[in-house]
Each structure stands twice: as C-alpha cells, then as structure tokens.
Length: 206
Image (cartoon, rainbow, N blue to C red):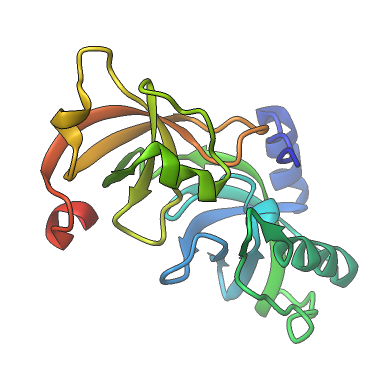
C-alpha cells in the first residue's frame, strides 16, 4: 500500500499557523524503525507504525498532526498487519487515547522538513536473502543494505558499474539516501564507500 503523499509547503505553513500541525525532532525507540516520538513542549506525541511514520526516520525534523482516538486506532491496526511475514511491533493505543496537550498523544507525520541521517552505515545482503524483505530481482545493479543501527530502515542501494561484488563482499559500507518514493517500502540510496570489515560494530554504527 502506498504511503500518504507529504503535504506541500503552503499547506504545512497554513497548518502550523492554525495550530493544526506541530513540528519537532522525531526520535525512534531503541531497536525499532516503527515506533517513535516527537516532543512538543511538554507533550510527547507517539508515532506508531510505518503508515503513521510516513517515511520519516530517526532524527528527522518533521511536521506532525495529532490523531483523535478513532484515527489512532486505525493506524494501530495498520501497524499490526503482516509485512512480508514479519509483523511490525505490536502496538497498543488503548491506553494513549487522550488528546490533552500535556502528556502523551498520538500522531502522524505529514511532512519531513529535514532528513537527519542521509548517510547510513551497514552491510549488503545477498540478493537471495533480500527476498525475505519482499525485494526480488535486484540483479547486480542493486543491493539491499541492512543498517548497523536497528533504528534506521533497510535501503535499496544502486551499485556503481565499476564496482564489483568482491569489492564489498563481507565489508561494511556507507550509503547515502537519495529519495523515498511514496510507492516504495524502502528508501533508495547510492553507494558512497566501504568503511571496514562487516561485523565491526564501531564501523557499522558510527
């Protein structure tokens, strides 16, 4: 299912001025890419599930919209669906239905103002292993990157023509996110450089 298109700058500005939207830094919970929060004054807004996150990743400066209880439940149900045989974190909004602005609320991302982590360290999966993530037919031109940090999403990476597989086999690499289309489950990225041996935690998480 496609992601919701991000709002245009004029819509974002109008919503911020009217108080319908708020902006802040998105912080992903440890070891997940599907549950995050945005702190707005004393309010902590929870963003739960890939649909509500709408392509935002850890550290992004985002524009968010508060959800009423009904909408929050809809996004929670969407977050529990099976994705390629891998269930997203089981989230429960029943205890977070309050719409008070002091405490916890639920929301969704409507725009991304600034992408924090454009460069992502990690390592490539062989094409056959990428299929369990729902990625098929990558060929030699693309690879699926698994980040060293579990707070960052996998990315489909375009490999330079002059680079051979032996050049990055068992290596930790650095890639740069170029775009995340609303019809793509994962962001697109380009290869930047190798940074060390695969499995080196200091290399893959720096």
